[in-house]
Image (cartoon, rainbow, N blue to C red; front, side, top):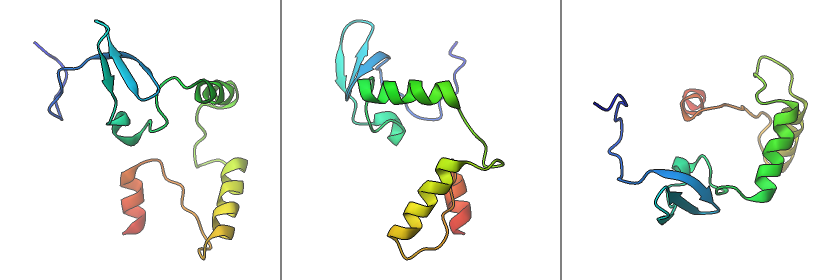
Length: 103
């Protein structure tokens, strides 16, 4: 019995690692990853610069709630408002929040 709820029709591919835009299964088969984690990892898998940036960030903060002041977020908001005609930036952490904000 498969205890995983299938909210999507799954492909018969079970990747165990990735490199760039490629996925590999435990049999050594190679697949071009057109899905990119449904847009959550569009920078690919295992790129040394990305891994280094993630490791550096993980040593500082993994996640910081919007309940706190976040200096980098404030700087990014300033850059975005200076580059556009908008005067506010709403940072959200899901598509649902983005849709709710738009409504």
